[in-house]
Length: 272
Image 1 (cartoon, rainbow, N blue to C red):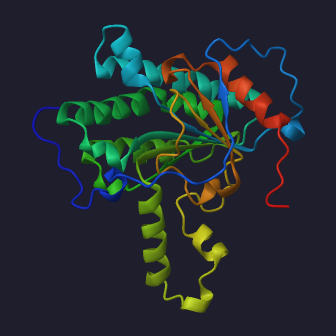
Image 2 (image 1 turned 60 degrees about the vertical axis):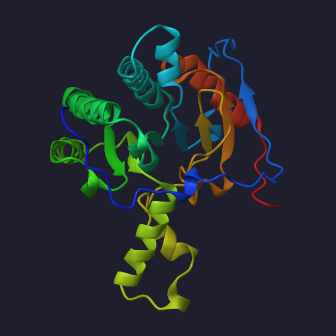
Image 3 (image 1 turned 120 degrees about the horizontal axis):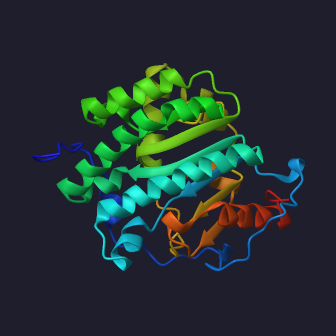
């Protein structure tokens, strides 16, 4: 991890500018950190969300509260990921999307960025066999070509090794940005030679990183903040949002179930 990190030359800048006050009237539920366990689980299969997306926030604050380093927090966050993947399989969730590293995260220190890459490579090497046993199929959402060669190699190996998974589609959003995804989709459509009148919502959806997958039914954000942070901004157009004050390393199966129970209690009207 020594030396400076080579960053993309077009790292997003717009998201760092001061934004205008929000004018929307969205409503979200904030979960209590001491929410009661939801076992026995009472949500019938036909009311489960097919696709759950999670913004995993709070690793660094979790570590700071315990006198640890940033990497201690990220390592604890990996342990939480492992359990949530297992629990998603138990619950019969079809697609799980995890926001692991945004393109905005390149602005962090060389030590932290390098540490995150190292941790990702280690996790993939150590967890690929279990992911395969769990029936998980891994897909990377993001610009793989901008990552260090060792990281790209580990990810590619995991993609190949889990290609036969049928129980859970596991999306890892790494070096991901919702705006960059739309840029890449537009470039793909132009490269295919589509004419303006051929570009519609179906064409754009088919050019996204998540092409062929159902849109997220619910987006969960841990850590107490209530924003989408450039995550799946096209796909989440009609998703339910669930904000939890629990820091990600402490977000376990009971908290996950509480989000599902809340989702099942809502009436989704899709503009009707």
